[in-house]
Each structure stands twice: as structure tokens, then as C-alpha cells.
Length: 197
Image (cartoon, rainbow, N blue to C red; front, side, top):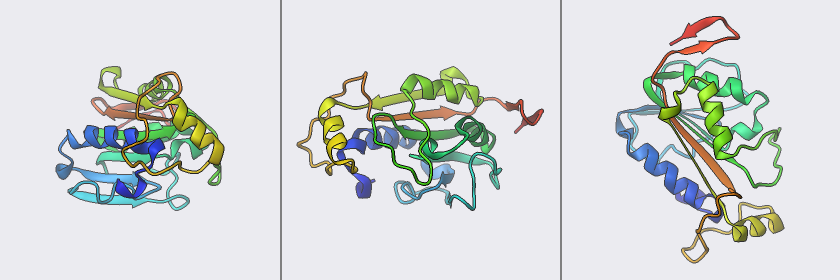
């Protein structure tokens, strides 16, 4: 993740890399939604990237069942995030993982939309609503006043992390939030009226 090693994302990147690294990524067929940040992070079994608008995570079914589906800084931009989370659950093999990262204290950045922000608790609830068991969901968040103020002033990705910037966490103002969840049961799609798996 060195190409994105900026202060506002540094702790999130390290935390999510550890979460994924602990579940044997070399054995996984991986799909990243609307990005390729994770392409060369691990030596995956296979890696696929699906880009909007050719693939809309809110409605387009995945072409196969994956061991890991990643949505890195995507969910704030989708019109129907709960549908997207359900679709990710449906696109996983049993025992597969979903990783979602989102901003919380971050400026509005439409590409082409910018609709949502989540707290760690809220992201956990969304993953639970999508079909993940509560005890199979890990959420986290990181932020501090210094990073928030720097980002608010220049509204860029903030300075690159050089080892000197403060990384202490002030839990009530997360700049970035992440959720990592394991699929352990079939998903019930209320809208479609069937069990997907």
C-alpha cells in the first residue's frame, strides 16, 4: 500500500493489511470493487478488479464466488450501500471475507456521488444487516485532531506518512473506518425472496 501511504490512511492501511494477512491471502480468489489498490499487496491465488460503471456493486451479481471481496473507499459513493453490502455477502464463498473501508471525518468528494459516512458501530450494523454474523465482524476506526485539521485545511489526501506525524487515536473522531467480516451462513435476500449461496 506504499503508493497510498498518506497520513490519513496509514493506520487503516496497516490494520486492514494485518486482518487480510492473517487469513491466508495466498489461497484466495479476490475481487476488488472499483479500484486496484490491493492488486500487489499479497500473492493472491487470483485477483480481479471490477470497475464502475461496467460493474455496479449495488445491483450487478458477481461472476463467481470469491474468497475475499474488497471495497476500498467505495461505499460513500454508492446510492444503495445496504444493497451493495448484501451483494458482497452473496458474492462470497462460505467462509469468505468482505473488507469495506470508508471515510468518516472527510470532505465531500463526489466521484460522481458522495452520499454517506459511517461510524465503526454503524458499519458493523450494516455488515450484520447484509447477512454477516455479529461475532464474525471486526470494525475499527482511526483519527486524531491533528490529522483532521490538516485535512480540513487543504482537503487533499493529507501529507504522506513519514514516521514523524502523530498516530495516536482519538476514538470519537475517526478519519477512517473499516469493517472486515466472514461469511458463515447463507444470506436471505428479502427483496428477491430467495436464499443466495
